[in-house]
Image (tube, rainbow, N blue to C red; front, side, top):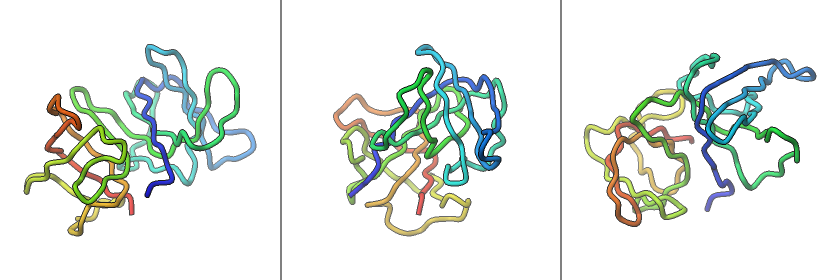
Length: 158
């Protein structure tokens, strides 16, 4: 179903610079316990809520592990999704099947009427979530396999 394998990197924005050859792309350096990871944020990157990235901000960035990457240090990926990371909240991005189980089998969603379900441009989404790329915000999950959670918010990337 999916042609992407989204991998998260969480950390603190250290530096943001413009790319020399392309003024429409930024190089965002993120530091975490593993060191520095650079992300190219361009026109094709989805910046959640169009938040303005700033040094010192806690963020989570997702890159597609199926794409070729340059063998440089620190590692540099093209951001597919990037957004502010709230404390005490988890984020997951990936494809979900008709049972709302993630493609990698790690997370199952239990939807309620209180879950905010919107499209990437903030509009209410009232269709089936199965078979779609979702960004899921949640705080607690079970220890089962797959982990089950009732998300606070789901963003559908149409």
